[in-house]
Length: 129
Image (cartoon, rainbow, N blue to C red; front, side):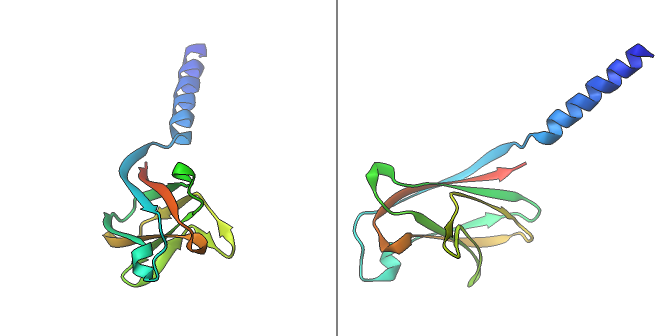
């Protein structure tokens, strides 16, 4: 009886420990440095297209102020011409955002700087398992 309870305890502990942990798989790192603001908006943006898979959860982690640049990177995830995710909304800014993909497709990622300031930022994209 004691041995059975001990085995159940060990199995339960192992399941709880595994359930509580999330593994992150590195997908891509985007680096965007904007030293001078251009009068042409498209020259102040970084644009890349990535394939994301249905049922997967992705996390975007932004690191700003590299080399003491003041700008904070604003990320927009676009499905065709529709923005479906951003890290700057209603005056709030988030350095980490998550996205649960509901269809396998190519998505556009647009990065620009808040308040049209020069900046140097890195965005790490990971898949959460």
